[in-house]
Length: 264
Image (cartoon, rainbow, N blue to C red; front, side):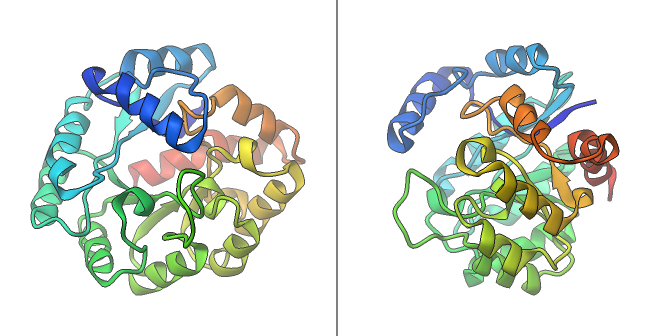
């Protein structure tokens, strides 16, 4: 079984412009148009059974629409939708309750697009609220090629967030810190949080990525592609160059995701 824990899916009428805008900002060539249908087709063709569909509340104003879309995907045969809330939204707690009541399992934070540091006091309060509701929190980790420093979700700042909310169910994308793997290991490897491997085939060397995964342990690592910015096939080939056993790869491919998604 293969679960892609990190994909981006947009409402059909917004997908074309959203993907084009993001591609221009980060200088990436997308592999899909970002629609649900195109994402499912790519996932099916590359052996993915289920995938986590992410979107981002880039401002308090967009929060409700993002979560409407997430809720609309519940019951899809492949997509596992996550919602999103903005730390400076007056309605964030109501949105969390709405997501929980609907059955959504997690929320996505991207601190660069949301323009807030990962250890901001308001953000910490929102993470606590997510933890109290049992929601998984998936962070973009480390740098983002579309933004200049300072990095808002550096491993050091994420560590402060994890320490402040020890009961939180955190997943930090891009091996815990895109373009910051040494810092990821230094600040995060001794915490309970999990990481995903999304986009790492585009940004990290095989050996440094393997060393990072070993530091966290394969029981805390999730498969993810970051589609439409990379593909499951590329990511799987990248992991295949590493010296992991079949048992370790199965944990990364699906076992860890199933355990996280089914936990209360």
